[in-house]
Image (cartoon, rainbow, N blue to C red):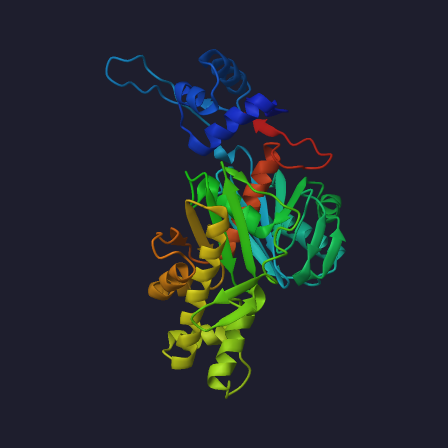
Length: 383
């Protein structure tokens, strides 16, 4: 059949999202999930089936009940480019509509000037084996409208119209977000928190990131990614109160190690401290155990105010918590009433590609009309 495209309606979008996240799924299951009548579901489904956006699967028969014909979507119908920007590099992944990777790429940033970054994004687009429908960009900063970067300290950006710049260079719609917000949406849709409606994501590495999903929706705020670095945290074991950036980040690791060892033998970085800890260096191991405890304090403090069912611990140093789970548990417990259970935590191994997949989910949301894609009419290709 010749390729055609059309704009989907808001009601069709709700059904399509359910099929994307849970397919194959029956009409009865869709009726229950969306709280719509079976007649309405049948009408919406027929419209999407007739234009080739949604497919009918082979009938499923249970006993003597009437056969059910589940609905699904071909995730290769659109490809999305997710890009994670740090202060030094761009990591990219091209995925299908269920974030299965088709291609990965990336490179150090040639420059942090916004125009130069937009041109580098265009270079990544040209390297993709398939042209993406939408570009999603996640970065350590804030964007209230999904298009302008209000502030990104690691890039030294303020009020940068990044989506407009990228769209000018590529001709493709672009959506921008705080990287931890994008990561949380991805983990809720397809990752470690799939099926969870109320969870937090805490990331610790160069900085501290936090995102909250409630009722399956991201809790949005203008200050996303901006406040935790200066928020004071207390470690009752060491008897210190420090701002987040000096409490459990890479900078804090280096400071702790220098204080314990004198840092003899050359320059110290968080990576070198981590390597020393893996090699059994006593001072480095003490630093890493302190990090694990303090990450638990951060998680437990956040949980006290936001009451999640689950917290995902992610970021460059998340693996320390898996290596020293007792120290993580001590941190979770030391700021809780002893009669209360500690918050439930899952440690997710670090992979920069997962951050780029978070940006790809941002692009999927732009494709479905759940994020602002500017003046572009984003359409899903039918068969």
